Image (tube, rainbow, N blue to C red):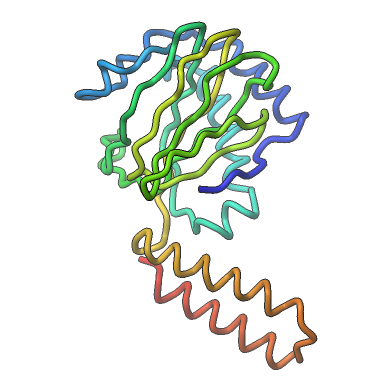
Length: 221
């Protein structure tokens, strides 16, 4: 799980302005199976030029983000869901479907992300809780920050107790073969960063970068 800054202050102002023009309706419409019973929120109407303008702007920020590109080797991004949680709203324990139906066919989701648009003082409650390795981690992040996690993780949004929580939720297909390949690459990258703290020769730096490039090739689809 990673938290990255996606939108700066100016980006946030523009994103909120675009989203303020969009109509919202019952979020249960997009839920499937058991998720319908535990979901209570509002979601942006995905039709119309206002929704498209907001999505085009925010998705561009994801695609341009150097850390996103380096960490996840994104292949493509799905259509997102822009949601609102008012007082009493929440989304109980659920998981994201591995293969989503889209207008262009079946989309395989490797990573999910939640980009927060509301400031921390605009709501209470509403923590994103993600289950991983028998542990529950809760995230309450600042505006413009996004949490990235495996789409296989069970997760939930704790009910909001005050104010309104607005977030941008999406899915990403990675070029990595699987999550184990992603973890292996991240382990190498951590070692790479540690090695660069030492006084390495140009030849040694070249060899490390060469191995890293080879690993990306071997571990990607």
